[in-house]
Length: 431
Image (cartoon, rainbow, N blue to C red; front, side, top):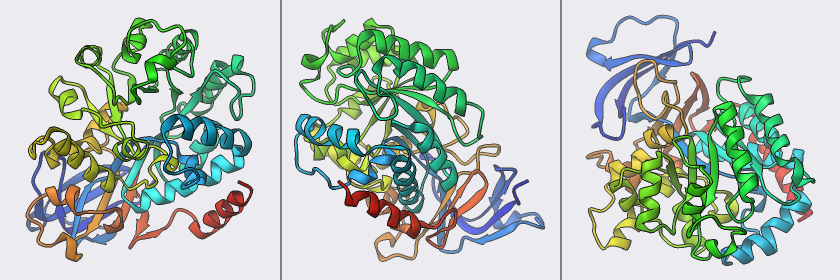
C-alpha cells in the first residue's frame, strides 16, 4: 500500500474554473485524493508523508494530449523545413534506420523526465515499438496512454505492413489491464499513410478493446490531395464516410477544417488535440480552436514530438495557444486563460477517456503538482491567469503521480536521469 501524503499550508487550485484558495491542506491515500480543506479546520492526520506547501500552489497535474516520446532523439535534427520535406526526407528515413527497442525505451524515458520536471503527469503517445514506450513511462513513474502506431508501409517493429493490425492487437493484449497507470490505445498515423481498409480495421480493433483511437488529420492544406481513394471531399469527411468518428476518436492537429468539418466532428463527439508550437514551427497554420469550442467540440492540447516543437513544456504550449488565437482573430478576449488551462487538464482527461484526472476532487487520482511561487515572474499572483501567461515548467517543485512523489525540490526521484541522457547521447552519435 502506498503511504499517505499530506500537503499543508498551500495555495490550492482545484480546476480551471475555480479560483485560487490560500492556506489549504490535501491528503492523498491509496493513490487517490482523499480529502482537502482549510488549514483552520484540518483534522489530525497521523502517519502521512509531510509536504510543506508554503509559498507554493497545488494544482492538477498537466496532461499532454499528443506526443511521440521516442522522438527526443531527433530533437533539432531537421529544423526549419516544411512538413512534407521534414517528414519524407528526414524523419521517416531516420526512423527507418535508428528506431529500435532500446532507442524507443531510452528516448521515451528521457521524454518522461522532461515532462515530469515540467509538471506533466500523463501523456498520450503514438509511435512504433510502443510496448517499450509503455515500459519506459512506467519505469519513469508516469501515467500514460501509449498507442501503437499503424501505417501502410514497413515500419520499425512491423516490417510487413500486412501485419500492422496484428501487431497493434498484440500490444493491446500485452498492456490492457497490466498497470493502473497505463491505458493502451491505437494510433493510425494519418489518412494519407493508411488506406481506407487499414483505417477501418484499426478503428474496429480500438472498438473491440474499448480503447482510444488516435489519428493525425487535417494538419496541412495539401492533405486531401495526398489521400489515396478518398471517400469524402476533406480529410474529416473521409474519416466520417469510413465511420471512424465517435467519442473515442482523438483527432490530432485539425488545422485545416471548414465549418462543415467542424459540424461533423461536433456531432460525432470526437475530441481534437491541437499542438500550437508544432503547427507554427512546420508552418502548418493556426487551428481555429475558438470556433471548435463554440461548436461544442472538446479541445485539448499536446506538444507533439520533440522533432517538431522542440520542447515538451506544456506551460509554454498553453501560452502559445492563448496568444495564437488572439492574434488570429484580432480579439484579445478570444481565448481566455482559464479555457486554455482546461485544455491541458480536464479537457484532455475527457478526450482521452480518463475522467479521474484533470481536477482535484475527492476520489480522483492523486496526480498533482506543486509550483514554486517564490519567483520574480510569478509576483504578484492575482489569479490563475498567470499560470498560462507567466509560468514555465521550471517553476514546478514537486510532482505526485498515482499517489507517489516522483519529483521533489525539482529533483527526479524515479530514475537516474544522467545515465539516461548519457545513453541517448550515445545513440545520437550514429545519426
